[in-house]
Amino acid sequence: MPAVSSEPADMVIFDLDGTLVDSDAALVGAFVAHGVAAETVTFGHVLADECARLGIDLDSYLDAYDPNRVQPFPGVAEMIGHLEQAGIRWAICSNKHPRSGHAEMTRLGWRPQGAWFSDSFDGGPKNLVVPVAELGVDPLRLIYVGDTDHDREVAAEVGCRFVAAGWNPRVEPRAGEWVAHHPAEILDLLGLTPRR
Ligand SMILES: [Mg+2]
Image 1 (cartoon, protein in one colour):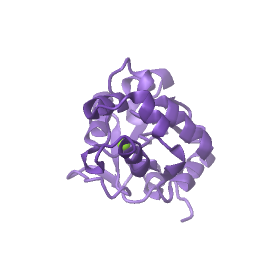
Image 2: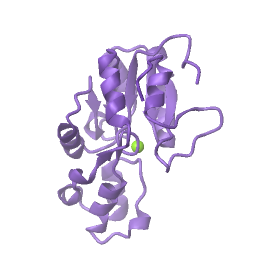
Image 3: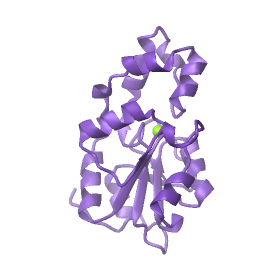
Image 4: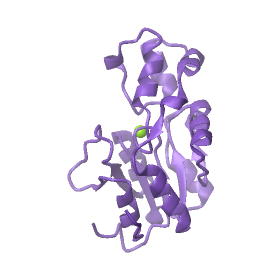
């Protein structure tokens, strides 16, 4: 896979659910605990919106959400370790509720440069405008890794490179876009050569 652009990327921002962590079971489980049929739950939204759509109280949902059911996708923890070893800054930008987002990062021992959750966007869906401004990063040197159409849109809005988290079997890559089929391929895109 060739390098991302002539401008070498020096920062990676990741979506969280469905990108760094496989949280489908935890997300769905908390709805099922409230009597919602699993197949009616959809992904990638602001939690408050999905709770409202399904008629669930947000705090009650969060009480039922078990962050211990959430695991990184295989290869993710190693990839993050390599980024840190190489001095590549990384961050998280997610629609996840901050209560469960911070709980998961603490449990996994992750210390990104920044983490923007659903409380960072004035009640609206996430964007990359806020983290790009607060980090002072050049979008041309930034990669955003995500798993949904909304992730593609937030990357396009700031003009950074989007990479589809193709290691999530739910991801449907679009023609011509960058896809990483394994987290280690993120390192390839940055010109790093990890030991597999
Ligand atoms: Mg996601």
